[in-house]
Image (cartoon, rainbow, N blue to C red; front, side, top):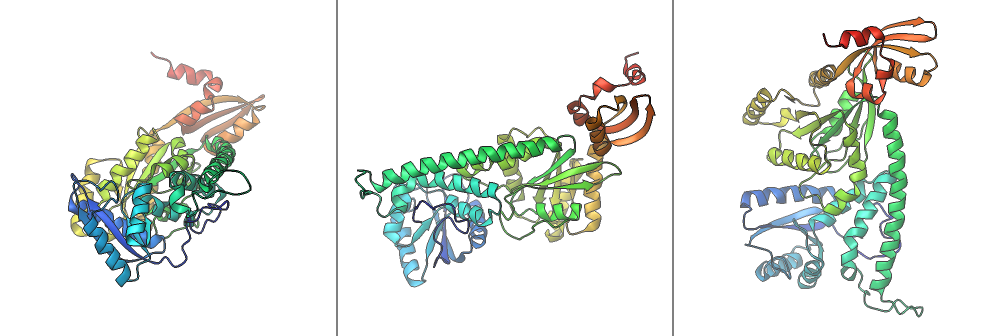
Length: 440
């Protein structure tokens, strides 16, 4: 990866990918981590590598109490990888852990090929899939955070003088540019956040359902099935980096807003989580979270834990959650029985295949149950001069009765209790409604 003043603007790859196709994966089973867990994590790394357009030639696992501070792996494994790289024409070696700048530099010197760690690989996938300006800004910010401590590694002329009498080395010049670029991107992201906040305010009077889940759990497929509209669906990790919101009628006169969000992953690099917090903030506004789970995955329980941990980080783990066990058509009979038992114990869970229309109706019905449980019926006297409020009520509530008397509109409506509070409807409660609600 050569650091230049255009670095991060190219959203095809965050490093020069020409010629990098054949890769070997390296994992480590450290003390306290079972070999099985390490192998399953290596399997996920293989999926990540394939998504990033690498061809996985081989994978290897080393058992160590702890990583070597200089090279992460031991000298014997380094010799093995060097020989493999030479004999099998390997372009890159990808580690299923984060490496320090010195470890990555030492490994490249010792083995003689490009070294990537888990963070850099995920960052590259994000760059590949950043289709909107918002996503691109966030990827570029994460890229700079990753590069800053690694300037010397990625710049072969790091300690040369920059020229023009400045007296600065390339490292100093590049570090200063990274700081300036980072500030510019941060300012751009603040503008984007203001726009996103404005959009959220416009949606604050609707019932918001937000899909969350581990990457590739089938959120976008479920979104497309429920909304009936085209939404990008790919069998890739992190195919969705930008929120997609659709208005959906799940009940007569009660449209909801359904939002698909970026997928979560175990050990998501902290710099990526920080930069994509603006996108994940959509879930903060949710009235209901649809936690989509790939029921066919061998590590679905771990994936569920990962999602809950992210929700806790966002401080929204107290939101109502409907757990949707997806891809049941791909699960074996034993797994299906296991999931059925889970659903029997949890009234806010159901098992589906997002490809089955009947299953989609079941999800809609469960959303309606949440709507009904949270709904309130109000009798209101609203002045006709409150045109904006009346428009919101006509759009976002179920009108049970409507009558005009003088300059007022008399309504009996049903809507979400949170939305009633946001609209401050207690100002317009009719006298009969207040009397009916008064304690005996």
